[in-house]
Length: 201
Image (cartoon, rainbow, N blue to C red; front, side, top):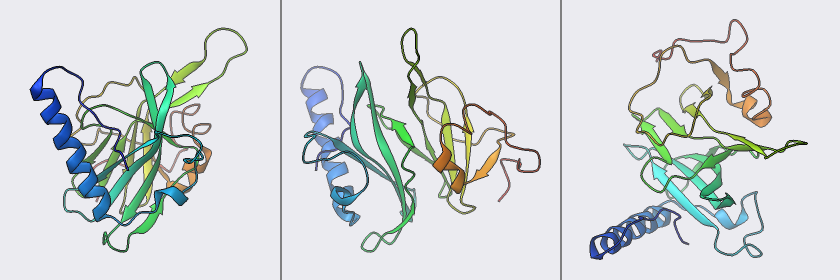
């Protein structure tokens, strides 16, 4: 199984970095017993070369997977998302929304963790238009593994490292992710009564 992450550059240092990244991800993927071949998504036997990425939470209690990654536009690669709770030898599926695709970054920010509780990804969606070029959008999706909630912040695909939650996030239950992106991107704020302070534990 090939991880998608690679290093862009030249010279021996780049090749060394590439080998270390691939080895690290291969070890992590084997550690978590995940049968990605059987997950919903594109036919991996038909579409060869789809790649996968796994990122454990800092304490190893959870694993976020961006899988079956492939190009959807020039220099744009996306994959489906799944979230698991440990232990790694018998992982338990927490979340695998069919419509949520995540943008692939060729560095360490495709999946980020804020502590052991919050997982951060960049959702990606392309909307076909009757006239003109298709419109794509990203932003940032925050997933709370304790409260089983998610918050979406519209915006550009920046690739920045996120180390803390922004203030004033509007949280929705994970069930709303089945309606991504229609009730998320179109309505940027949650209904009254469903907003919570981002720092609550």
